[in-house]
Image 1 (cartoon, rainbow, N blue to C red):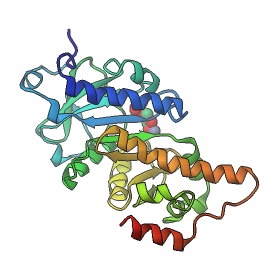
Image 2 (image 1 turned 180 degrees about the horizontal axis):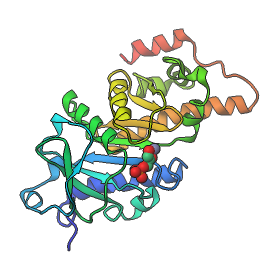
Image 3 (image 1 turned 30 degrees about the vertical axis):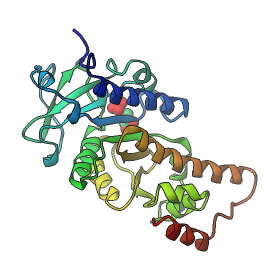
Length: 267
Ligand code: 13P
Ligand code: ZN
């Protein structure tokens, strides 16, 4: 069977972007084994011929009801699949799914019956919110950045906005490109609906969400932008850790400097 990407350059481009970012995640050391997941809303690239394709899986429950996802299609990393394999062979390590009309279940349509990520409830909840927000955001990422996750093992950093202010103060770009900062979700069972619901709550207030002692989630217009959000925060964490490993506590930009930036860039 021919891949659904054949003769569909726009859809193939979106999947190529996922593969490129999957490679970055592996290179950064954020994607041990099958760690992390990516999903992209590809509905705009789904034509009548794809819509007519039969399901190649049973109907699976999402675990929650997501009304904005009616009629939506997603490319998803497969569960237990490696980012480094997704980078080289995206359609063998991910699949395209359609959400069914009950908005509570899905089936796999192409290319192979690769079951989507175990964090699908969180991913689809993020997509549901992105559609509701109406900003045209299409991509969601969950990854395990070493520096940022390490910081969540210090209870002092888990208090509201402590980590956000610390990371903003390491380099001005972080404030500029992550103006709403990093929200913290207290530890919850991976892949749970409870985790998905807490993630959505935190995304109402913050750009990026940290799952305590696990990883981060970010969203964006495409997967490059979602990745950049995490990369910017990780850079700040690296500057902090580098200063600490040189033996001093970094001073950070002052509140005055940050306020000035906020005004200048209208953040
Ligand atoms: P999956 O392999 O199911 O995507 O899980 C990876 C992960 O990071 C779970 O939080
Ligand atoms: Zn994870």
